[in-house]
Length: 267
Image 1: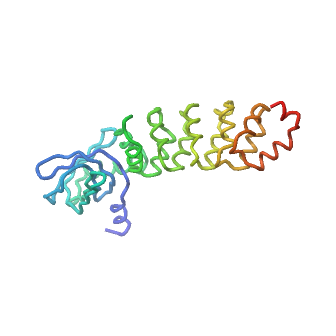
Image 2: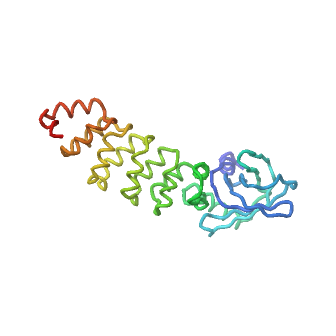
């Protein structure tokens, strides 16, 4: 096998796919956190295996693909704080053609960001820690792609809890985002300056005066973007902007310099 093929087979991808592992005469539901063409990392609440030979079945998030293989236990690690056991599994021998095709399809979906299995496991009762853990089980490009296309309010509410500013920017570009959601998003102080630009340039929100005021005074907005937003404001909007503590001092001085004292008194 050449070096390139070895690299391809050994590459691991964060998956978060539902799985069942069988050992010591019992079945245990778990999650395939890392997936590769040569093995996977399984995470679940199961006992330390006595048997070194295991069988695993991994399914796609949609349930239309199912991959089963025997494997050899490579390592075991217990996370007592999380109450989880992690099993490193290496496939035994060469996969038959049909199994190899299914595995390749699962890997492709993970790489392309079309297998949001972790989100399906979350409920309204899930804690912020659970949400963050499940989100981080997916690769970052997957989460960004999902943020950009999430259709349901439930998906978007989950994604909004993602700690990555790049994911939040993906959400800002989502065509299904509604006005209450964007108002919640703009209140987040960790947004990137480019995310503020995305929202400021989106024609959907130009008629929302409160949003425009929030954009112009966001702690991460650039002076250039804030100036552009303010130039399109009515006097009543400028009155609201000038009272916001987040307004850039330079921009505040420019607004005051171009506004007569008489106008300011009428505010």
